[in-house]
Length: 288
Image 1 (spheres, rainbow, N blue to C red):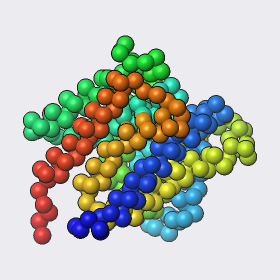
Image 2: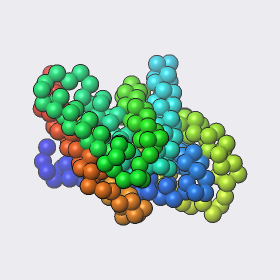
Image 3: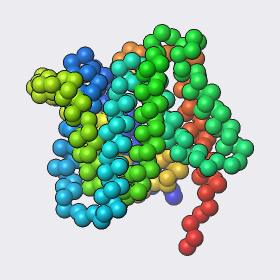
């Protein structure tokens, strides 16, 4: 693939990643008004409305197996977002993203056998250990937040697995249905926490911005980019998510991280990057 041909999808994915982290930063600003559960419900519900209107998934027919996969895909997406926003309420954005990234990293390294693969695992574990509130990090990291972020990582692993089974790459209607199911799961928690505040016209513009930046725009950009770029390059780009989260947290939320936390995030990024490159090299080419 020529550099010119891959530049466009790389730009789209990178822009989508930036949007995701900006959206997470804006969502954290909603916590004092509607709580983490309320912000999750607003984000997913508004994103679902946008995606349903744009992609109109009711025009597509799903078989029984795919319907089950979509239900699991949307269900784990909803729980993942609830856990992640609950983590954001107590720990910095960059640390939350790095801890959550343990999920896709575990999926990528599942079934590892080569010594280099275990080196990436060791590096990731060391990086995650540096992010735990065990005395060497600052007092802005709570163990409850860490557990929520790790739970979100487990859900992210399920999101990847069930998303593949649902055929996410086969059409945007699957994503629209998944987000709608996720919204249906998150909305009762948001309503129980925030009640009528969810309908406050004063916060709806910010909530819509969060929905667009965190869900609708990145999903749409990924749909355009993924068919035009190798999976290896997509994985390499995604490896930068924890670093982008730390940068967004610092610039937008003024969340400063200490040296150990930055080293931990860098270790997670490097482990993910190395695992992506190693797996790509070890994957045999498709049989023609």
